[in-house]
View 1: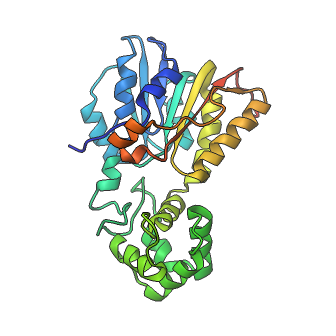
View 2 (view 1 turned 90 degrees about the vertical axis):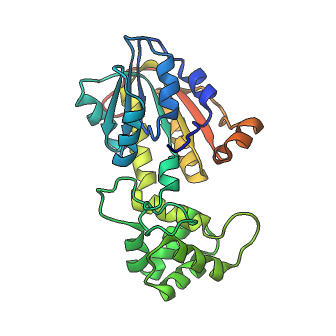
Length: 294
């Protein structure tokens, strides 16, 4: 069994302000670290809806957490409103979105998320979707590759990397791509030179930024007044979308901001769980009933 440590668990429980008989959504349940902690705060009358687009992860988690109060739904959190309507839920008391990869996805020998892996270039969170990282790497134009790597990875050497990829095609595994990027850019500092490119490809494959914006809008429409939305992001592009979306909805009188600045893990948590080091938590609270334009 893969060990999984939830990020900012105490802070999530504090900010969600869980009502024992309330209805809560873990919109990106992963291996269920946060879900397990939320369930401890719920009485038999409470309910937790767990959503994930990764069928393999969902299968693992649903076997780990077998509870009458919990419902597992396979789907993308951009479709949260429809997913919940399908099980008879129109309103909820709180929503959590943890935007990080699960340990299962990152460590899998077949999923292709890690540049340290010899897995095929896949990177699909939902393996029923069509486009893989290999499709982009091997078929996109040099210009399009450079744009993806620069826009989604904020990589200063995007053109150099794109040029090397086109010259080195076909590329089939994560290791092949990582080695090519390292030879094209030369290692500088502690961060592997392929890190930003892999981030960019993963975002492109899964449409992560577009999906996040839609998910935030869905969450706003689902929350009861005084219900809270907690979002944990792991890179600047995600955090910027969350920050700007919260500010916009604050200006529209939909949300009030509970966190004026992002909450980050303390030193002890980072030492225990190094993957938490880049996490940023933002929290907003619903002020009024959603309207048609939300």
